Image 1 (cartoon, rainbow, N blue to C red):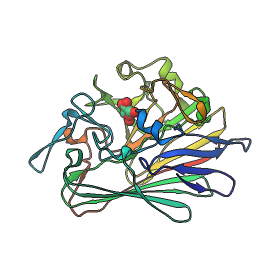
Image 2 (cartoon, helix red, strand yellow):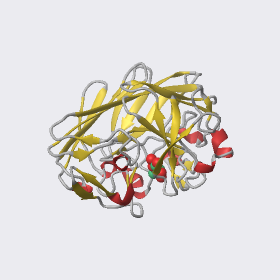
Image 3 (cartoon, helix red, strand yellow):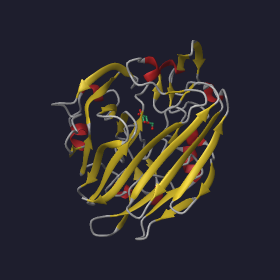
Length: 327
Ligand code: BGC
């Protein structure tokens, strides 16, 4: 367990297991400190439960259809872990590894080496993720990698936020903003059909801050199979930029989101089964919400999407930031 403290008693607590965010403690509008992410007290709980709580996801976030793809003319077969498909790196994925750690003042760097062929992915991959948490309550996540063969890479972090405090364990009172004109349509297996749904006049429209729970109460027809929001937003713009925000009207904690990635998976914890989390709190469906910055899911099968291909010898770098402040 590693902790980065800010001057006012706020802190970020991380685990070598999964390079996961275990706690993120931020002041509410009255200066009381609240832990705004879901998590568990022990590593064995992280091993026992599904859901990738707070973990780094790799090599590829989200689903790859049939756990296979063609890269450089070669057919690559991954180890499927969700029916025929690969989810969040498949077997031997980054969330279940013990990472090497080095730390400096306000930062912690986790590293691992993923060998050629691991989970089916080509190339020896040197991978690191650096978390920085500063006195302005900014959480900065930087991913860096290099591979000795062309490969696929699409890392993200799977923190479930509850800005009312994790013990509140419901999403009412959350306002969400996502700067995107379209969202990808899902098929029955939560894989993109390739079609983009314009958000205008739908419950996907978060171009200005809107209540997240409204869409859970009156879901769009494309939300029925996946039981809530589990959709990739096609974010406006490119390069490192502000991509949205979230806030709790209950705690008065607000979070601005910035990223260099083209997509954002908005996932409302639809598949969280009842379980005991930190401090004995009972988590369940819709206890938290993930803002997973990423290349679009299954992009390798959709040539019109930006491709998550890492060329041999080229440095991969991406950055996502969550900035906390009072509403
Ligand atoms: C996916 C969900 C999946 C969940 C696993 C999310 O990133 O989009 O479909 O059930 O991860 O916890």
